[in-house]
Image 1 (tube, helix red, strand yellow):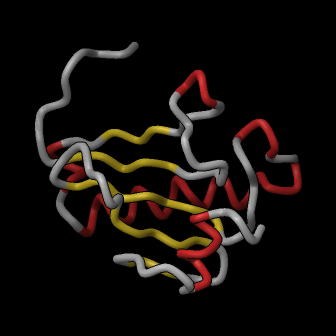
Image 2: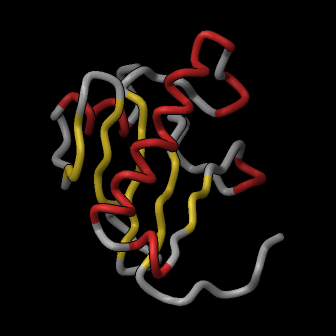
Length: 114
């Protein structure tokens, strides 16, 4: 996807502040954080949104959650708490059409969503 900003960050064409990388997942800091810790957990594979994911992507989606848990534990967030968010579609606030998970922590969260 040549016009996808996350694909460009993953490819190193645009700088990113990476905190984790492997063959399938890349994690970098959000450039407009909403909390002291705001990480974006992204698959290297371009998937526009959760709606576009297929059964072939199940292991990759599961790995995103595992990476999130491991990063939260490494940063000591597992005891204080953190939030994982996946926005799907414009109506839900998705602004970059590349599937990604927000890991947000470091301050008390506002209104309870559920």
